[in-house]
Image (cartoon, rainbow, N blue to C red):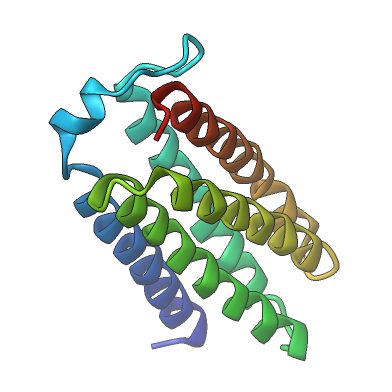
Length: 158
């Protein structure tokens, strides 16, 4: 099996794992979540699955583009390590917010998640501009998610 195919399998597997584990937490405590006061600008619940699916696909494509750009440099490995950290932060937000109802801590996790995406964009740019561009919607969404989490925290006085 060629190295490119292996990288696609490994990266896609990693992104799917992050999505599955994160969604596991996202279905926890739904009654609690539905009872929370939410801002008027919050999108309908169905949009979150659609948006996250699209973002995870773009994330995977971006990582595949980066990894398959030759020759590999130290920056390639830094980007992949940052991608793993990003995946951990992504799952942690769901675990904090939905799994443990720790909205305040989820604000900080969301902010770190957004910063990790911005780092990935900046690090990816010299390797593959297309890969960096594909991550911009993820940065915008995580910035919005940070603000949304903060607003939910404020509205619920928790």
